[in-house]
Amino acid sequence: MTAPRPSSSAAEPGSPAAEPQDVARAAAERGALAYKSCEGCGRPHYYPRPLCPFCLSAATRWREASGGGSVYSLSIVPEAEGARALLFVTLDEGFTILSAASDDPAEAFAIGARVRVVFRPDGDGVLQPFFRLDDAGD
Amino acid sequence: MSPTPQAYIAGVFEHPTRSAPDKTTAQLHAEAAAGALADAGLSLGDVDAYFCAGDAPGLGALSMAEYIGLTPRLIDTTELGGASYISHLNHAMRAIAAGRCTVALITLAGRPRSERSSGKAARVYSADAPDLPFELPFSPSMVALYGLVAARHMHEFGTTSEQLAWIKVAASQHARHNPAARLPDPVTVEDVLASPMIASPLHRLDCCVVTDGGGAVVVAAEGVMRSLDRPALRIAGAGEAIKHQNGGAVDLTYSAAARAGADAFAEAGVKPADVDYASIYDSFTITLLMQLEDLGFCEKGAGGRFVADGGLISGEGRLPVNTDGGGLCNNHPANRGGITKIIEAVRQLRGAAAPALQVPNCRLALVSGIGGSLATRHGAAVALLERE
Image 1 (cartoon, each protein chain N blue to C red):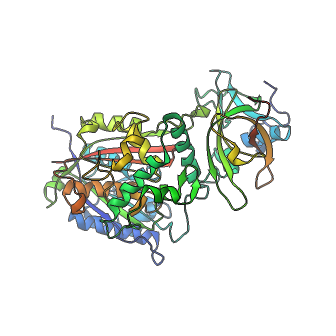
Image 2 (cartoon, rainbow over the protein chains, first blue to last red):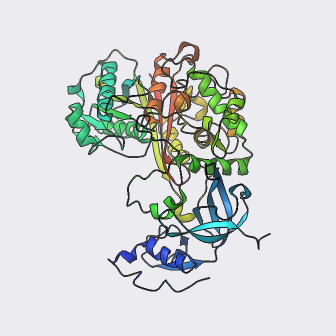
Image 3 (spheres, chains in turn green, cyan):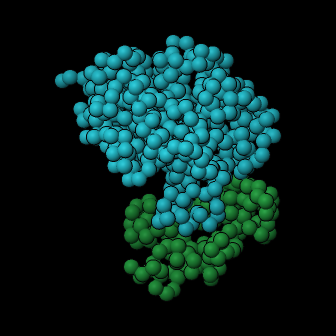
């Protein structure tokens, strides 16, 4: 579950690639959901940032989530091209992230449902962590 | 030692327009300022403090002070979204208490109706917001973000769409007495449930109106207030707070109004049962329900039962709320409801509300606002106003 931080110049200060979203994007391209955890207080956080929002320590490290979680809340938005579902997903690592449903029909999602991350391109073609129902779950 | 100087609301003005395609936002600010100063019986030269928020065009207070013609020596542009103006009341009170100003002007204006800005699209406040790359790809419209909060409330506490609909019904029963209301016709629970689903579980009629317009408030020190022919409405206590996703430790069951309200009640030395009238921010039905619970008008989770069966209708319910018709039916200028909440509370305390909805001998009013998104990051501001 815990992996070395993504390769390349991701953490090089001053380079564009040091932006958290660029590190997350590089992880997504490898099929991994990147988040950060603090070496100081031990807590995970999301969205990822250089300083821990619980203790302001700069000793934060990139981690990769298992990708499994459950729906904390959802809102289904009817649209001409089909309904979509905005989600809050609580990952098995204990933190909750804003995301949206993918692959399965929006109406099939419910609070408490087991879900698994899938990486799909957003409107700009950037891979983002969406969630589908977890067939392997209960 | 002399007692702390007290602060009073001396003048208010709600711009009568709900659609202003032919006016600029700056002009609406200035018209609101003129209206509130006239209501107070004060003039431009009396103003020595100016408050505005993110709806002010240009470089905020700098642009607006020039446009309106102000020369303030105290300026505050605290930005808490739609709650900003209630926060401004709080800060004006403390500035007056500290002797830093004597007449504070607060203005709000905007044209979302003319500019076709609504809650159905994701809002981007600035391109470099740190949350943006992790949220915008999922198109979090304002309605859907509040839908997340409503869905969790239903899951945790058994709140129903019918109960939320009662909040709209009460607003519409009030709006029919307000000739300026954007939606003056009464609606039923069935009407709300039959309206199109915008973002579950929120229907179109669970959402506030989109209106052009504005409003302004004048806060005065005691010496100024005593010289005016107006009821003295004292700002008895105030509080404010911010709540966010807490690094991923998300809990949608409560709002920042819990902290803001506790501070305001403690400062004023009163409790929820003492409140005669309440203006409570109603961008969506769930917004109002959440604050009712967090402010202590009912237990957490009991908001649905509190609002049901006309619980918020003046004269017949448990607590008279938003007797102007609120943001749900009357007005939500600039997509920000904070200032209209103050204005209707002042009408009630002055005995100047719609006669059918006037709370008899209204002496203590609560004003509560939520700005931003309940689901991700929001500010709350609460003030208690007392007629002396």
